[in-house]
Amino acid sequence: MKTLGYKSAPSPYHPAPSYKPAFYHPDPHYKEEAKPFAYDYAAPAYKPVHKPAYSNPAPAPHHPAPSYKPASYHSEDQYKEAAKPFAYDFAVNDHHTGTNFAKKEESDGHNTQGYYSVALPDGRVQHVKYVADNYGGYNAELSHPGIQGFGILVNH
Image (cartoon, rainbow, N blue to C red; front, side, top):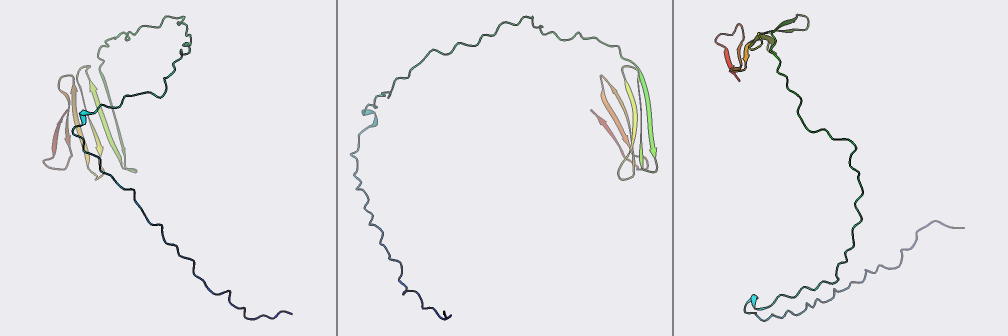
């Protein structure tokens, strides 16, 4: 029958042995005799370890000439179309969603003029009248009804 009880401690504690590091003995350094000038001495001759061997390369693969004649590069014929007059307009004004914009444009074939209006996020409506042609470019005049002294002339 075993009795439960106190067990004796293991054998007495012995610390791990300590070792001293090996003593460092650096190699002695000898001063080299000073040489008068570097160009007094010849550089060592280059001697390759082995001579590289070259072999004939494999023949290039044969690609027969195409059986069709490639088309030479010529730009498409340029047709100068006569200017065509046009005119259109549209408008959307939806009070339910707040969408409000319109555009009208007309051209006689050379000069284009028109206007558009758009509702801005701050509730104002911006109107833009413009004229565009080959000489003066695009010229626009902005206006915001209800705001005094506001008008910007934009030339591009």
